[in-house]
Length: 149
Image 1 (tube, rainbow, N blue to C red):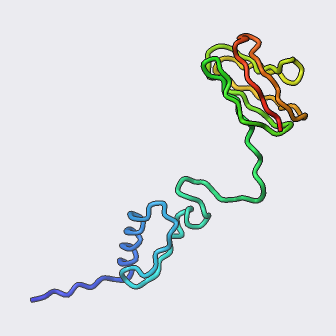
Image 2: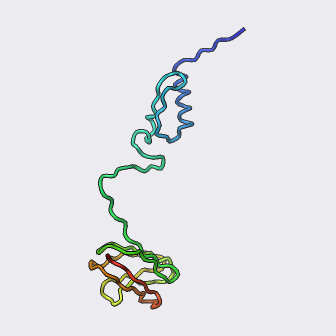
Image 3: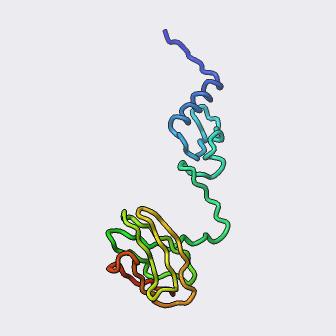
């Protein structure tokens, strides 16, 4: 004797939705043609309707991005400088040492910034292109050259 089992369309939709939730978890895909032949869209997830990724980032480029500041890093009593910076650029200085340092133009006058141990500071590059020698006011052996072009 064989027993005939019937399933209601509502139960199939619930089962398909549960399967989608378990396998799609954060996916922005739309599932079509489920086991019952019905079409079900994954519209309950914000990722499927807003165009965001599973990491929550959105793509909203509406024009040119602002340039990130140039970076000077101080570590082990040495400067790591960018190859060059544009005139008037914002420059961020990160001091990874425990000692206070400065980034001072030599001769003085073009720029000078003090950076506490473990801290950061910013300054503006000179508006005139050229090569600017730099030195730490506290540690004369710390030198470098900032190229503005």
